[in-house]
Amino acid sequence: MAGQRVLLLVGFLLPGILLSEAAKILTVSTIGGSHYLVMDRVSEILQDHGHHVTMLRQGGSSIIPDFKEEEKSYQVISWLMPEDYQKEFNKFLSFYVTEAFNYRETFQTFLKIMEELGFQCSHLLSKREIMDSLKNENFDLVIVESFDYCHFLIAEKLGKPFVSILTTSFGRLDFGLPSPLSYVPVYNSLLTDHMDFWGRVKNFLAFFTFSRRQWQVQSMYDNTIREHFPEGSRPVLSQLLLKAELWFVNSDFAFDFARPLLPNTVYVGGLMAKPTKSVPQDLENFIARFGDSGFVLVAMGSMVNVNTFQEVLKEMNSAFAHLRQGVIWKCKHSHWPKDVNVSTNVKLMDWLPQSDLLAHPSIRLFVTHGGQNSIMEAIQHGVPMVGIPVFGDQPENMVRVETKKFGVSINLKELKAETLALKMEQVIEDERYKSAAVAASVITRSHPLTPAQRLVGWIDHILQTGGAAHLKPYAFQQPWHEQYLLDVFVFLLGLTLGAVWLCGKLLRVVSRWLCGARKLKET
Image 1 (cartoon, rainbow, N blue to C red):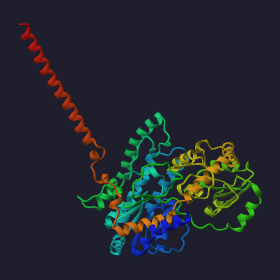
Image 2 (image 1 turned 60 degrees about the vertical axis):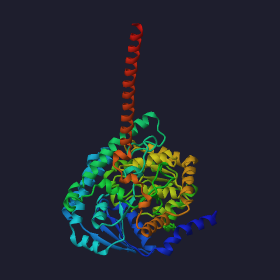
Image 3 (image 1 turned 45 degrees about the vertical axis):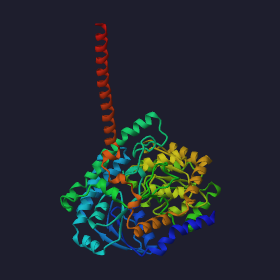
């Protein structure tokens, strides 16, 4: 078996080693947080494999506060938004998060954020010195992150082939995959692939809502397109999505429901994984205090501001006090409310080595917001979860976690100390959750190629072959009425109606002839 894997690996990578030269690749990241982390990892991997990578990145504040800067192996080009714009954008973002924590997340609020991103895009495309510099570099390939549609417009403006990374939940974008509504749940439907009759009805109706919202989000960039592309050659965003040479999806078969994929769609979930290291000694000392009981890791993502959810924090702290395990909680000390005493079994940390802690033999549970990167890391290490989804794709992600039996989810609206404590104890004590998480870990680890090898191998493949036209179906070039066979349906319907009409005419003629013959005989 090991020999077969080696042969497969060599067969996949050898053409790249022999034929490909170092390519000039531009990666684009205009958003911070987990989106930036994925693009940073992609840039790092490609640079380490011999390509010359440059990242175009927004400096200063972004959709999520910036992470601690480290020296990069690749080149970085930064640009800044005007300070007054940034303040306005942060105000909208803060409002969106606050609304979500108060169970009032609305699509209209999200649309306002996308409108601001459209304005940001217009500002970037107006920076002639940056755009001219990028054009002069003559990149071989652009790699974009699909949350901000501006990335597609940048690639189009440069006139270069591009590859897209889907960093969030699978169904958030329609990029041409076959999606049978009988078993592929529409984004935000909160359905599984096992739908009863009413589930299929709901999924069918959800498809129209999803399509309308996709159009509304993309329309937020209409002014930018009109301003920066001449009439007659203005791109349509829905068509730009289909132009991507490849789609790399930050997920895995172990996590997502099985569904039809196209040849240019590649799972790279687990791309963030790096060799694990020993945790710092202070954490080891804390973990050792709880012996065989082990510890629980708590991390609620980059966008969760403790000041926003004081009441939830108090309930969580009370719930952790019920556990016999230790709790390592990523939560800034400076934001901790003065009137709340931290439970004696809880250790607060401004920053923690999440992946290394998930790999620790004493971990028993991961309490998470349900972000894609966090879930993929937990699956990688076979750790069961309790999810507290807040907004975005997090509820969708937790539906999959529950369906696959890796853990359970708690609605933020229903979060009380007793409920959370019971859920955590349930997952820790029921071995079925751990077994399912370990089984998923086996699936992710047993791929013939690692996510990084898949990424590099496919990038090299399209560089060598001059694009991925051979991987994309002709359907991407067909008008919608041909793609859905409406012209065939209309033709066959007309043929059938014509045949029925002709048969009717013939029957009348025969009937008249028979009637005439009978009358003639009677006379």
